[in-house]
Image (cartoon, rainbow, N blue to C red):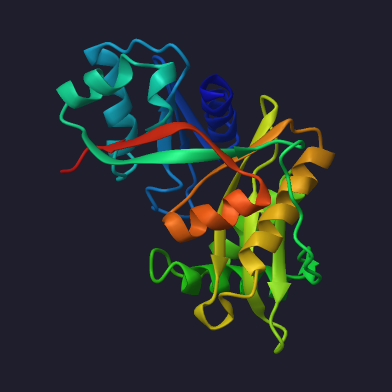
Length: 248
């Protein structure tokens, strides 16, 4: 599964508005934001970068005023982390990822999961996710536009509407590539937590990707509470992803 996840990461970054490929690295950039969680790089499976390759990658970020940053499955490219460490990179985090297949998916009995159909919906989802993630990013027209692009380019966005017509919680899934898809941004506004919203949108998105031909869906979790939610839906541990960046 590590090879699928890493191959997906490469394919997904190549969908960014701006793409730079230097040596064995693919870097994807979105000019609408400076967020390091959107502007980052990943190695090709089996990459064995030289010091010159890493220096060229750093320059690709520096010339755009961005922090050099990578996300990847280390088992697929074991030579990458040592090369980055030698260049001064440090480890931000190591995240376990979970995988769901059609055989393990369990759909909870929950009605009310919707597909956004208006600019108001996309803006409301973006605002709800910003609130759910407690300041990790701010709601913006650009964020709403990225959600729309995800939905319109072969991925999916799903949400549960709050009684006032806004978004109570939602998530998104990137378009499938290499037989798999990444589910991300699962968030519920604090006032609506504990009602099964996260599990419902996760299951709805996962089922949608299977209908589009994906053989698996993977995600990363932020804590044991969210892990339990995903495991109830049918996600199981499969591997790890490494986050590395260069400060200064």
